[in-house]
Image (cartoon, rainbow, N blue to C red; front, side, top):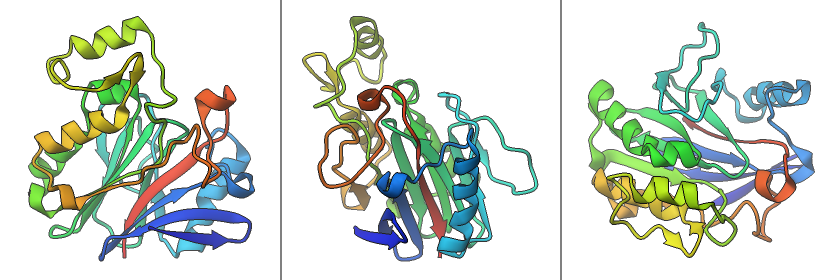
Length: 237
């Protein structure tokens, strides 16, 4: 993991030897909220900053739809996006939810997944791995996973209704994912990856809480009661 400064802005980058996983921060008030002119401008700026041809993203709906990115299409609804085109980034917006970036080193395919509590409950990361296996012949041993900054169990207290949803879902029923009333999204994601037989040495987990870490400036929807958006993306070199 390394930091990259571009003007007043800061990005966190992981070099996956064939692909790069990038997580924006809030330093310099860099905001990727696509509902605002500034956010749309910054998305376009990524092409210049990272020498990209295209940047694919979604209208995120907290569901489980995973789509193939085509720059000729209108922006699609979904929470997972895939490409095999070089110099083309695919990414997701986040401000507490879990961004998960995936790289298949053999098939040369990359994917970005947005996993809020709804997506986590529905195991969207597992579904993304299944999509890669079904559509692109991916094998678990060739997948590299990057789990970016998100709200951690230290700051993520949830209500009884949500706790019950997880405790009565077959996948999580016997899993250790709560600390009192606090939900551990990290464990949820790692359980999904374990279930898909992803090698632990291929999982890059950035141990950074959006709500309370002191190392990076990050947006946190819960902490700030509404805020800007970060953009987590991946592209083939």
